[in-house]
View 1 (spheres, rainbow, N blue to C red):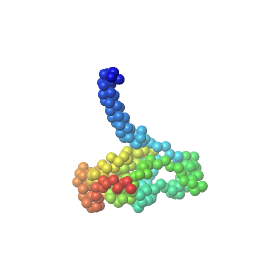
View 2: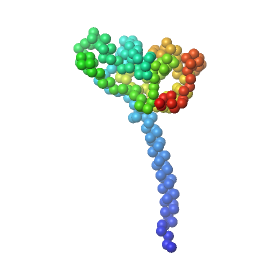
View 3: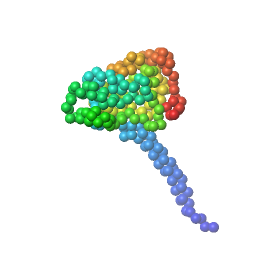
View 4: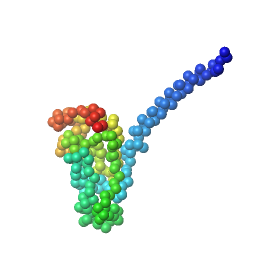
Length: 216
């Protein structure tokens, strides 16, 4: 019986397997890399808001504490977006006719929420509780960065699982005294890990890396 395929097809088939493997490996590498770039994580990308809100002005300039606006951060899983009446506590007295603040005044008149664009938005399959982290000594700036230096809010960290696990595996590197949780000027001491180990014991912190902790 005559040979159906030329002998060169043996070489071609082997080459196609090698090329196919390289293409698959390249595709997987590109996907993995893209998942860590600002194109998908939005790290360092300032998000436009209407009206524009400057944490730098309100926190560093006016000295407003995080909890004045994010009122539920110590007792709830959600830090809370301030109600319009919180904004109007000040803006019924200052900048009362500023055109840039008309969306806030309109919200107050109509009782319709300002449509803020969430910067730190976790997937629906991830469970996160602000109150637990605050109670254990995790500072705002540890996750959100130096918000007191942000004219417009941006994401400081990827919020990817690997980033979360870096803290969950070794919390001593990141915890701080509880009275410094909301202190934007706090910096880790030279012996942070040693001090952190003491806080881990004092605050009964355990290294939680089980999948069910965050995925429920």
